[in-house]
Amino acid sequence: MFLHFTDPTRAIRAMARLVRSGGCVAISALLDVDWADPWQEILAPIHDALRIHGLPVEPFGARPQLERDFWAAGLSVDAAEDLLEPGDYRTVDISIAVWRQIRMTAVMLKGLPADAVSDVETAVEDRMRDVWSRTDPRDMKFVARGCNIIGHR
Image (cartoon, rainbow, N blue to C red; front, top):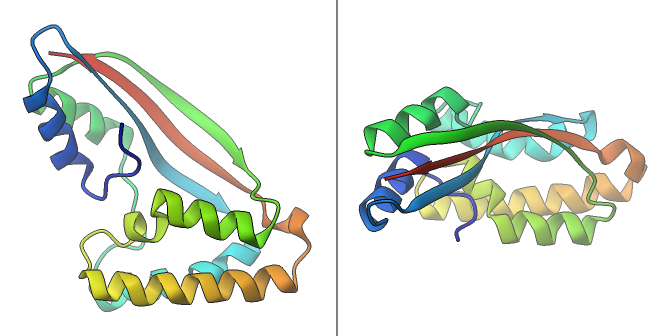
């Protein structure tokens, strides 16, 4: 089990190489997020870094591409379902802990050098602390859309 690949296409190929004939591969992927307004200020360093490096500001993939990656890697797609998940971290400490654990900044900055990602992670955490200190926690909610895909070799 892994959490948040920064290169899902490569990860799916690797999983396909490792799974035996008849074996199962399952992924749960984030497709996009509707961030509440206060999050826009928090995400600004991420958007700035992507623009500076000439990368798209929408860092997550699309479900059809993930399904094509399964097929291209020699995996069938047995099931695919969309997910809609409300997000509510409740406190800044939880927010920072979750972002660190799931490597959200790295996921959003895929393709950037490690030192650039580290600098942006620090900036994002500093903004989280600042925004959370002056924002009602009820205004910090968001909605994440994703999908689960299950296939086999």
